[in-house]
Length: 406
Image (cartoon, rainbow, N blue to C red; front, side, top):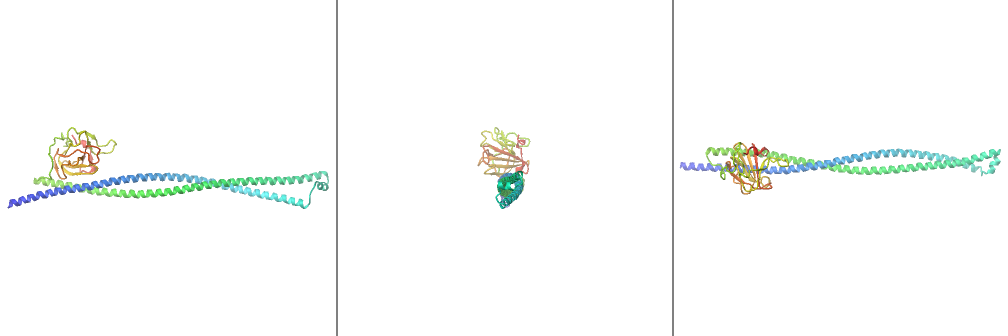
């Protein structure tokens, strides 16, 4: 009876450990999915933020251009104001001259009319009148000459004054015409300036709205960043739980979570000083893309993409515990992350659909096949995307894998 009870207790312990392992794996997978979703949202938000900043910069440039045009038009308006002021002064002077000429004309015309009246009142004056009223022939000629000269002088004076008055009037009209043209030009420029001011106001409102959008997007990014920090903590807790479970399993000599495939390391070749082998078979170990892309952008990994590599096995470069084994629709596609006993983490991505042979929580040995090379996720052709990360295994902890390979 005692043996039966112990056997039942042993079975219960095994079941509990398996359930704990499955729970830890599920938690890790759920956290990773949540983090990936957050990162996707962050990337989308960052793209929107970049677009908003670019649009805002373009609108600000348009505002600067409008400011320049407004300043230019205002300068022209000020110049027109100066010319109009000068014309007003000239018109005032012309008006004064015209009034003086008119006054002089009126005075002289009045004098001439008075003389004509006197002459009319004294009756018709003839040549005989000058002869009879003169003391001598010389006096007669002199009187007649003076009368003729006076009449002629009056006529010439009045004609001159009339001509001068007409010239002043013409000059005044020309000045008034120029003033009107300047006023029309000023009005037109003021209208354009008003339109520019309206456009500037609209652009400023647009910038204000873009600034508000920028603020909201940045807040979203900040919230997602904080959420990912929290998720990273939970991942580390899950890793710690996995380690604790592994230690407990080892101490009780119970099997772990069902590692799959053989543990041979024949495919990876020699072992490096860091304890790693190549993740692909001999003959396919040529690195086609290094830590940086040809564009200069950071790759954070190396790619193995030799001809014929499609479908080739992918090996665990060292023994360790599988942290994540899942598929993303984009990005890595089918990928696996292993936490190694030396504190490093490795990631294997773009594997063929259905080729993953390990799950989160599994214990793997060096050289064990974990997946096959494919082209899932964000991939342009069959290759293995291979990363090495330092503790605590986050995205920002990626280092050059070549330093750890044979």
